[in-house]
Image 1 (cartoon, rainbow, N blue to C red):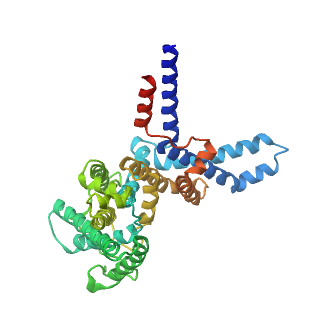
Image 2: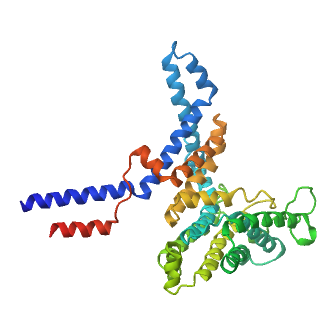
Image 3: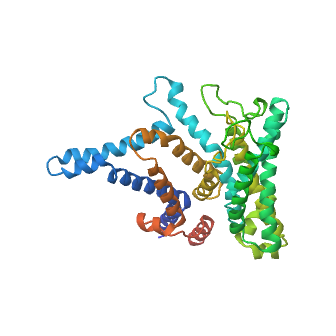
Length: 409
């Protein structure tokens, strides 16, 4: 009798563990990504003229119609793989591995900016001002890199620090308006995005404001000094630079801040329940200011990555949508350090492989559809649970183990 009871306890424990795994965020996010790619494949097939033509003759040659669907999907996602991971048709290893280095290069600023947005999510805020913070950081980094003469490493580090400080000041403005005057951070950050973009363009147009390059009608800055440039990480054969090191350090720093530091504990406590945090003696308003300042600092790192890695001068398009993509990266990564890093790599692969997909005859907008659908599914967990019949989140593992121990007794 006791043996049967022990077996029942073990089976119940195993079922609880499996249920927790299947209802957890990693599984749900992975299935959201998979579903996004599946629907993206449907878009490729439905809007491909060759596939449509082959299916119009399905009765005469069904094998050709079915194979055209397979080859269209294979060519599309095969081009994405070749353009972002490894080029199987390359003549040598260097050319073959170059797509992966491009994915890492595109992912670095997305990861850094995504960490900033993720931090505010953990504090219960919604910072969508990474675009403006990057713009301000770009202005600061460009000023240092074009108007100062310093030794190589010091010049690059100073330009990076100034970019972070400028972006942090832009974030502090939001924090003060939020904490002291009750302004909503979403509205404030949206408005400051416009202000920062206009200021950045104004700086590029005004010679007296230090950022206007000599000659040309398009607003453009001078080229950063060689001493301020981010050095090549793998040699001249690749475009990958030391911005990747900054991204790795940012991930480690974010993890330590949020998971191991007292500061991070306060952030998480405020995000979980601001009222309880205030009752425990935490100054919630000051926490908001610090969170928005540090969040903007991560965006400043992304700005330094962009400003100090170009061969020519900066233009108004240098931000390249990183600020808004950072929101998606933070959502996809669950606001966790490792998750944001993986999401940044995924979106970096999309950016690196888009041109290869276009060469293969697949519209790069398909990737935009995939990205949007992934975010949609992640933002609406019930949809994924209904499609894949996933269990609802149950009690935490520690609660399961306690119940199991009681039953065993």
